[in-house]
Length: 375
Image (cartoon, rainbow, N blue to C red; front, side, top):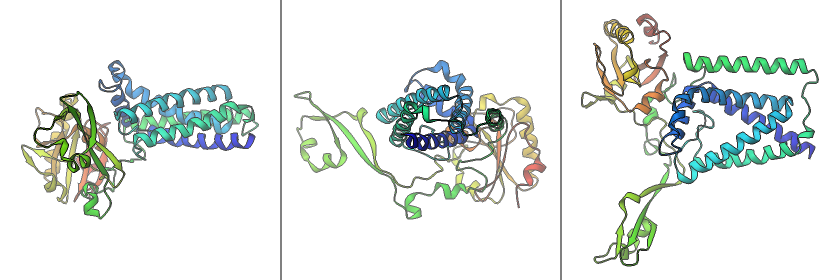
């Protein structure tokens, strides 16, 4: 039992540290994920919406700290109880997401690793088993370092580093960018389908719900079953489509493009291909158009004038109308904008579709700094 507890201890500790770290580097992104859980069609707890970022920051750091405490073997009761409560809560959350297909990515490992809802659930079941082993055999957990002052010093240092990492991700840019729009990534390549790359795409099954108007019986069948038996659609059949209950179910995983919904609607014209093929492009990314102030618009106007003189194509990508601007702008899906960069506004520089620079708004950069991104 002693050795099983020690193995479980190190596995759980490392997983919690990794899981917490990839979320701590980008608390805003994890906050967006929590907002999905708070939405009316999931748990309908809208009063927590404005607290998503503080919660995301706290839980990210808390995961890391618990992992460190477990590895060091200190604060044993607090750590074990906290781990048990957390994993029970996360297991419920991931089961709910998987069973009701509400939140398709739990955000367990941020943008570094995408898990399906059921993969997230079974991962939590695995962790729950290990944590129960640790909880039952906690008497076998001893401090890794005998000098408790060293243990406490390490804990404080970890907490300070975690706080700095999270603060940097919120105030500026994440220290590591796991997204498909990170520097060095090519957006055009990221948009290519599995077929274009010669890879196997995910396989989906369409499920139809039909009701027998004579007996009231309701059945759910696949599209293949439907087309293979004419009793469902023959003239005079009692079976009627319940069109609002039609759903699509993934039956096997495959390659999915990491860049989704990147389409630029520029005054009614799709200019996605145009901008992705230009040698020098600067996008002002504005996920929340109603929250950009006059000073920021003025700064962007200045950047537009200076950059266009240097033969740089400049446009804003936004989710809504802007006022008092001199630069052109295109409408883009808000989720895509929030994925590209967490700032509002943020700025990215592209060379033929490849991201060569990203800039936060604390403060916004000058044109000279942006131009340094280009070769």
